[in-house]
Image (tube, rainbow, N blue to C red; front, side):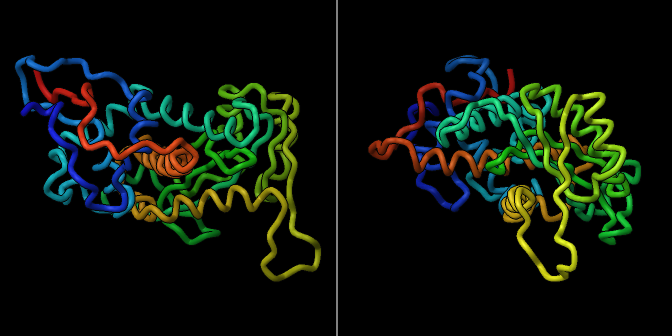
Length: 293
């Protein structure tokens, strides 16, 4: 029996894609470059590759600790890095985000956003050149700067050393955000972005940055308008153990993990809204990737 016709094994872990979720992702992935019968290494299922990536994301295990039954860890890591480098992951993420926004009754192109940052401890093998010390949070590692839409979906991300000030990281983040989404005209942010950044954004980007401050005299926790949306996004990321500590030598790989975490959130929500189909027990006919030639 060929690899394309082999029955798809039942789900072993909660991270593995359901049939409804795979139906959403399959058309958005690049088609295999080699067909059945071409000489080379054994074919690898794209669904198995994504299941392995999601397993590492959710459990936080090292690549070498992938359980038996998944493709070899070097194969999985190769596709993880390749999809991040060639734009496949970015296109996949953007397509799902557009579907989520349309399903929520909004336009695919956002007009407003929220931004914030979060410092994450880095492991010992992360180079010193790409990490720093955040004195305010007492964290030695990296800082991820996020811009999200009004529903909490990721729009833009920037990875810097944790020593980077919010205003400095915010300037680079806003520049990339406006280049990617010229329709955005308003961004909400906390008091850490107040000052020169607000003036710069208005003069250079024609973008209004509105600072959401705590009420005067309030010393207890309080849910602030708009700011809670990006905080909820950080909580979604916190459910993935691979993002609790930064293990990546390359900042772009940490960025890829954040995007995969958001892909996981969106595909689960979209699958719940999709029409019900009978369970699929055979692999998709073209769901194989040749790992060599």
